[in-house]
Length: 231
Image 1 (cartoon, rainbow, N blue to C red):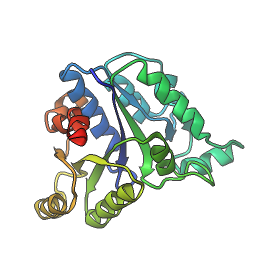
Image 2 (spheres, helix red, strand yellow):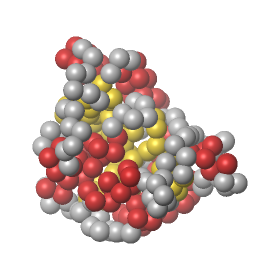
Image 3 (cartoon, one colour):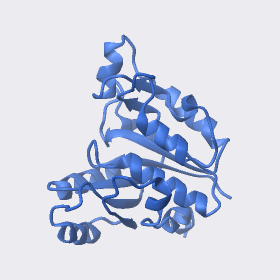
Image 4 (cartoon, rainbow, N blue to C red):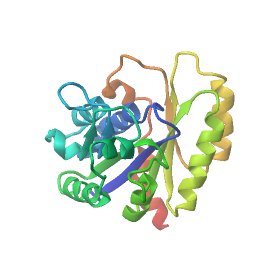
């Protein structure tokens, strides 16, 4: 099978990127793909020095790899990663992210790299996460946290992705609560305005695992993305 690699961004921090990324990994695995999640930069570590988002992607992946293969930088504080790195007297090096991605491409054929925060999260004082994604030429999947303000956040993010010269391969509407604010109205507006495949609406599933959540998403637009782009 051809190698497929995507970058997952969110409209904001806490938009549900990890949960949706894990669900996509399981959906791809159910289609016979060797799926691997990669969260190279993570903030907020437990006492064991590990980040729960990275661990979730590790569990959702088709192959069992070491934590360090799913992650390059884990910082203790839940803050912007470039600030956490500076507090430790270090600087995030984009090349290390690229090296990690290259290694994973040898292990699987469906690789999802999850960002940190939103699209323009800084990696250091010179480089944003979006700059690295543009350098790697990764198609983008956008997770929209469905809440008041999501229309503006989603449309700004989609526009920024396009301005970076990258394709928006698909987007997900993720419910952040059991009663999302005007969900149907917002969803209809986003479907009309976002020129990319709609991968599904993720309901509020606070206790569900990735396998159960995968049933709410359509993986086909991603599996066939390159075919459609070449036509």
